Amino acid sequence: MSLYQSNVNHIFDDFIKDLSVARRGELPGLNKDQINIDVRDNALIISGETKKEQKYEKGETLIQERSYGSFTRSISLPPNVKAEDITAKFENGLLELKLPKSASSGKKITIE
Image 1 (cartoon, rainbow, N blue to C red):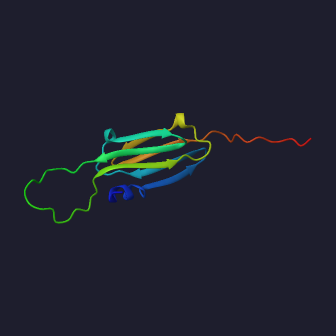
Image 2 (cartoon, one colour):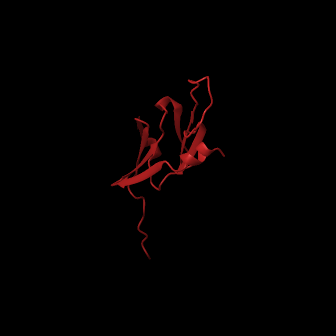
Image 3 (cartoon, rainbow, N blue to C red):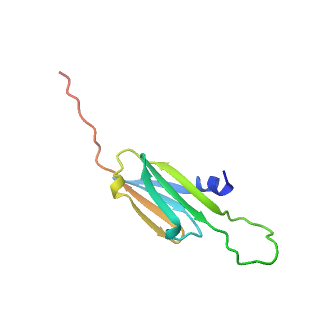
């Protein structure tokens, strides 16, 4: 597992409001065409790849703090999320996912 892969595991925050959940994550240096989002097996799969720029062909790298490579992040969907209504917005390196929840599907059991 690359260092970049482990860093991606700690970039998401969760927020709950009324009947929806929002997940917000930082993906600096990417544009929306470099990010893939899928729903599979009750999980949200976020993947992509950052590539190292080859701007400086001469000289050596002294310090490299940014990570490069491919990443995949799988997040379990909360109960009652309507997968078909999930939306995503990406702006200024911040990915925001809105996961609307359906009304509770509980059932009252009558005792005979």
